[in-house]
Amino acid sequence: MMPSRNRPLTLAIFGTLLLSLGALICFFWPVVFLRLLSKELSLSPTSTSFDVWTNSTTIPLHLEIYFFNWTNPEEIRTPGKKPSFVQLGPYTFLERREKVNVVFHPENDTVSFDLKRTWYFDVERSNGTLKDNVTQLNVVALSAVHRIRNWAFYWHTMFELMLIKIGHIHLTKTVDELLFTGYEDTLINMGKISKIVDLPPFDKFGWFYMRNESTMFDGHFNMATGQDSIMNIGILRNWNYRNTTSFYDAPCNAVEGSAGEFWPPDRNFDEITLFSADICRPLTYEYNGMMTYNGIEGKQYVIGDKTLSNSTKRRYTKRQANSQSQDPDVVNVGQCFCNGECTPSGLINVTACRYGAPAFVSLPHFHKADPILREQIAGMNPDDEKHGFHITLEPTTGILIDVAARLQVNILLQPSDSLRHVMQRFLGIRNSKGKNGTL
Image 1 (cartoon, rainbow, N blue to C red):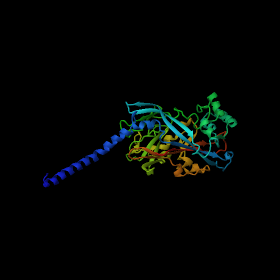
Image 2: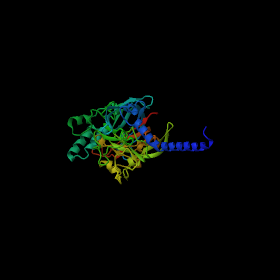
Image 3: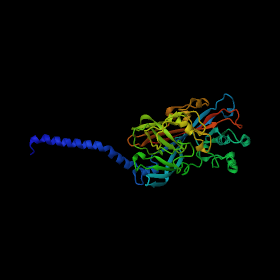
Image 4: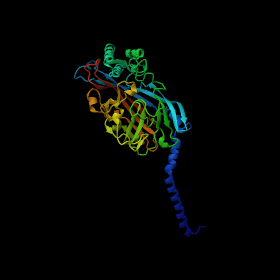
């Protein structure tokens, strides 16, 4: 037996070894954990995340679409009368997303792919049918007017006279026609024949016309896989084979931010960036605090002044995630995205991205926008809980646990020869909410 006088020494040595081992584990554990996390989260043909990423049917996605029904279009030329709108919907669709034409590029740790999105009408989650009638602005006619506004006087006058004869400021169509089926328009047919006005290359107009099950509408993506560094996972390197777009002036033409499904493990980012193919530009989300979703704590980021303000603001901070841009001292965000047509704060000019149509995106009901936008029309009732746009990430892994993507499409109505006695204002057409299902 061991002499009793040696027991304290043995226990002391054993305790010291345990403390040393514990200290080593504590010291190296963050590195070990990050490596384990990188192995599980980084994208490769054999990774755990690959099957879920390519065919994300395990997490249901729902698209809720609301239309603004114009109740007094005949009074648009009456002085002192505001356009009045009543919100219809939601018209809810189950959305399936599938990555196709997937090609890995191990030489630069990226993956290229196209996105196929399919929508199925969900009757039970909808408040209305696809046969409901909606009255709203004639987007095709207003797009034509907007395109010819800078033409020479003779051609401008001739085309305006033609619009007076065949164009109408408003129209009534079914929800299905406005979304997926599309509807024919005389101006579209004339544009195909004469090529005088460069209208969209379709035979009908509809917000989602020919988009269901298409692999082309969202563009071609090239994204970092995170194989070189987990901090790069999900960063969009190129869109449509370029790292800049032709829709905005530099530096706003940069293709940057997350592609939307992968985010790096959190490092106390003040803001994050997501690139939206629908509006051809990145969106900045600002940290809004900790939130709990289905019992999981996450960091919530919301769209705020960095994206919506048209004043001089600091756009990028040193702790911004998923951005390849440097940290310029000051960037006039509004000027950068205006394309020569700066608007009240709260509007995002997407004219160049939408075939030249005078389209502007905002939060629903002009939430967080200049009050003048709501004062010019009736029927807007902003509510942060209903109309805010947020993304919530699990802080340790960077996994997306909740998203409410809410945006509204607005059309600029302005006076012209064919639209005399009309006050310039932005009229809401529709707003939508993309929502993930439960984890």
